[in-house]
Amino acid sequence: MARRKKEEKEESNIEKLARLIARDPEVNTIKDVYEKIKELVGPLIQGMLEAELEDELGYGKYDKENKKTDNSRNGYSSKRVRTSVGEMELKIPRDRKGEYEP
Image 1 (cartoon, rainbow, N blue to C red):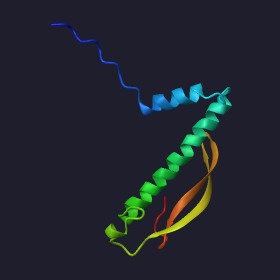
Image 2: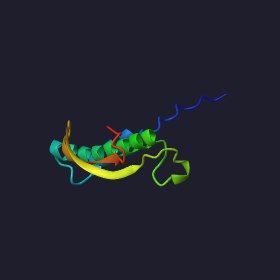
Image 3: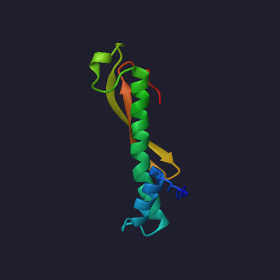
Image 4: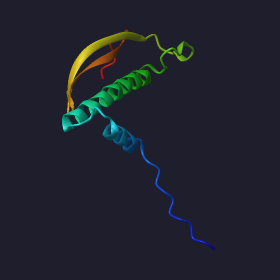
């Protein structure tokens, strides 16, 4: 019976992102790398805040059928935050009762 070749390890999403950043023609310096990372971190944090509010409210955005609370989303407030890759502006989701504190 023939031996199987070692299966090649599938590239992780992080490795794919790193490869895409490295191949970007606009990336020439380490500062450019940080700018690209900053572009990734903002939406990542934004998505985490949205998911956290969804968990706190107990229903998803536009999912009125599963809403079992009298609290609901109530827009956003802007916050400037400092991260290891620099400052960025985030839209912090709010709830009507003001109970959500990220």
